[in-house]
Length: 175
Image (cartoon, rainbow, N blue to C red; front, side, top):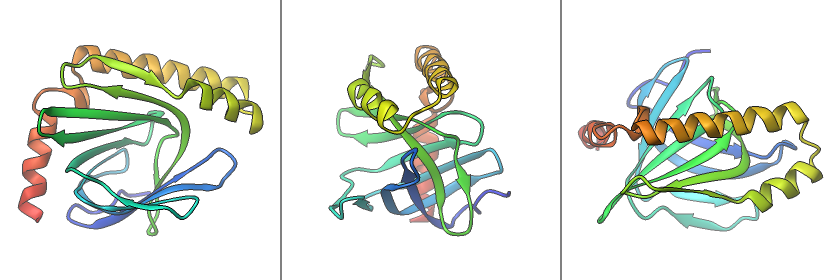
């Protein structure tokens, strides 16, 4: 499986463990696309929820997806700094239709000062019961939360100081 080509606009589809479509981002510009990593950007992109609600993102965002890690990271460029929203999720897959992953409810919000907060633990516990997540999946997800927290604290990968700036500059060349 090859990744999407740089400069191509793709759709991002988020699913739930039971296979139901959860959320769709209509258009993200691929800045880097390989078998293992996709870095994309979007700004004021249309998002459709599973219940049919539609909304539009408010600011430019740089998205980081990995085919071997159980999380993805969205860096949102706001007036007062970069905020990160990290989805605990399956590794991504890409086909000609879209970049796809399973959302496992748990999220980490990272503030410009690099403090962070784990979100949606109640929702995760509810879905774990309702969809019968296997015990091994629970361990995988929490191990990846540990990895993600280390990355945040070490300013690694998408959390490094230059990452968002570098990729946002690249995005501006495509616009």
